[in-house]
Amino acid sequence: MLRIAVPNKGSLSEPASAMLHEAGYRQRKDRRELVLVDAENEVEFFFLRPRDIAVYVGSGKLDIGITGRDLLLDSGSQAEEIMQLGFAGSTFRYATRPGTAKDVSEFGGMTIATSFAGLVTQHLADNGVNASVVHLDGAVETAIQLGVAEIIADVVETGTTLRNAGLEIIGEPILKSEAVVIRRAGAPEDDPKVRQFLRRMQGVLVARRYVMMDYDIRVEHVEKAVALTPGLESPTVSPLHHEGWVAVRSMVPSKEAQRIMDELYDLGARAILTTGIHACRL
Image (cartoon, rainbow, N blue to C red; front, side, top):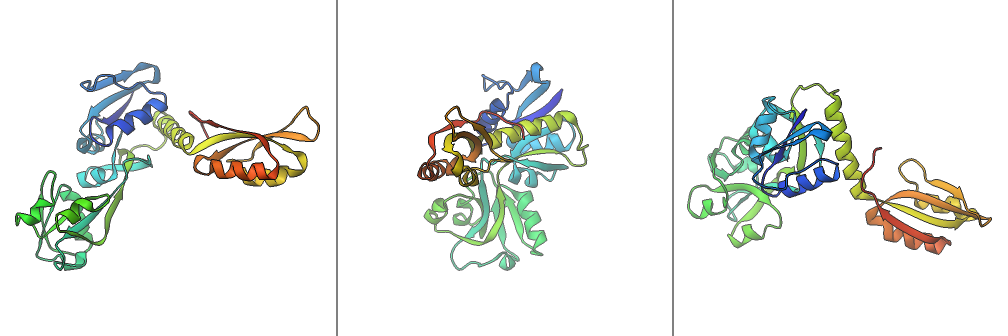
């Protein structure tokens, strides 16, 4: 069986399980379950702490896993990213009191508090900066107020929490993270079970981004209509019983569907319908 690590809690857990369910895999009903066998799909799921997943996968104990890019890089494990999943996005940045420093190049001799010590240590080394790193679990913004560090490195969304603590964001982002699929570095790329898993997950990503659009239009307007709805390869065009009319079916980006429907209607298209896509293979 393909052995897959899945986050058991936190911001990664629910979206990961939802995506796996959409891909046709069984998921646990009881959050206390640590292992779930999906015999029909020949997969065994292990529900683990998000921070531990890269370690298990990198050691070869599990075949692949879903975790955050930040957690993967912070772990220092022998695992690599093989697919982006498009959820749990975040930006990792430095922050400090105004006037302390303007850029990472000025951090020499200072102390930086963070929950991602491995990631920050590597970033400092990449920039040739000699600074101390203190590992803390959560609420790192208080480290400056309590004199533990001059600078913090943390996940930043709106920046409101930092501003409320009297801090400002400095320098360029350390990392932009999101949920990713990982495997052991150097693992064979032609594993058929892994390829099938990735195809399923890719199918979910496409299904979430697109809708199927159907409409009827006069033959003389077909070229302009299909220019609006080119599809992934080309649209399906079928003659209707009513002479001079054809039916068109095509995949369109869901974010643009309403605009496209308006333009098609102005072009003379009628019976314009959109339907959701639950799964696909490209």
